[in-house]
Amino acid sequence: MRLLRFFDQSKQLEALRQRCDEMERQWRGLRLDYEELYERTRRLLGKIARRQQREDEVREDAPQEGADTTPGLSPSQLSINEKILARRNRLGIRGGE
Image (cartoon, rainbow, N blue to C red; front, side, top):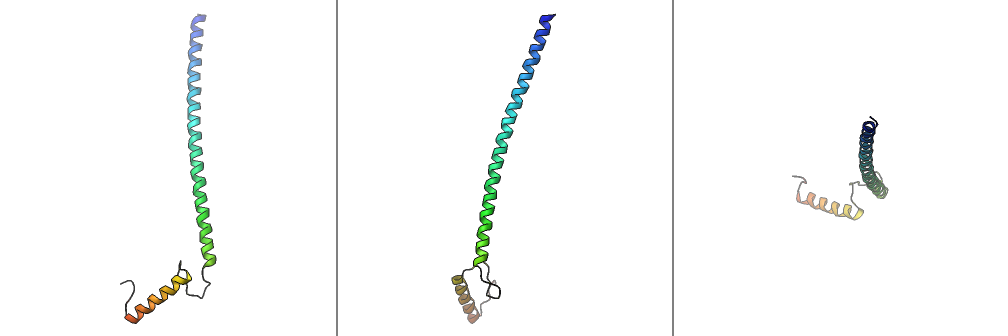
């Protein structure tokens, strides 16, 4: 009788060890998933912060209200754009058609 009880407990211990090993494997997998997600999120937030900083710098360099405000054009590009529009007006060309 004792021998049967010993084998039964031995089987239970082995099953418990297997469950514990499986939980450790799952924990390691979850930890790797978390670390990967954390790194991707950190990189994405860094990109967003850099983009926001560039946009803020562009806004600071942009002409003030009341000036000819064509979004995203530098002063030299605005000058060239004005020349193109003047030429189109002289030739009677409409833009966008």
